[in-house]
Every structure is written in structure tokens, then in C-alpha cells.
Length: 102
Image 1 (cartoon, rainbow, N blue to C red):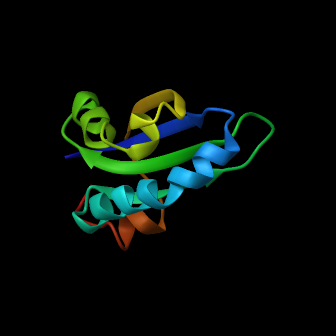
Image 2: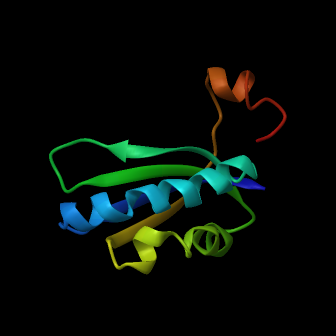
């Protein structure tokens, strides 16, 4: 398994995002319980509302497939998805909590 950094850019529809967010978080929480998602959460910045998801998968296609049933995606609230493989070579998590898993 490799690590993948997935970036979601959300549609500009705060009311719909608020309505579906509990199901979105439940879905991602289930993937986290399975050990697929390592970290997930919204990002803040100058651009549109977005999120970063760090997950384990065998390929870019598998990373996309793992998230394809996300209620936000199913409702058309994710306007852009970027999937990048990530080779973590340094850091406390690599040497600590994730040692032997990367």
C-alpha cells in the first residue's frame, strides 16, 4: 500500500454542504476505522473551500474508488478532486505512529 494525498475542492453551496456533512463524515469515519484514511479535514486559505484526505491505497485508481461513494461526491458537491501519490520520507509520524506502515 502507498500513501495518497487527495484534495477536494467543494462546490459553492454552503447550505447543501452543511446538510450532507454528517453523512460525509460518517462515510469517511468508516474508511478511517478500516485503516484506509489516516487523516482528513478541511483546509483554509484564499481559494475556494477545500479539504485534504491522506489515505492508503494500492494505486491512484484505488484511492479514487475508495472515495467514490462519498455522499459529497454523490450529491455533486465536489467540483474538483486531485489525487497524488505521496512518498513520506521524513517526520515524526513516519518514524513514530506510522513506522513500519509506510
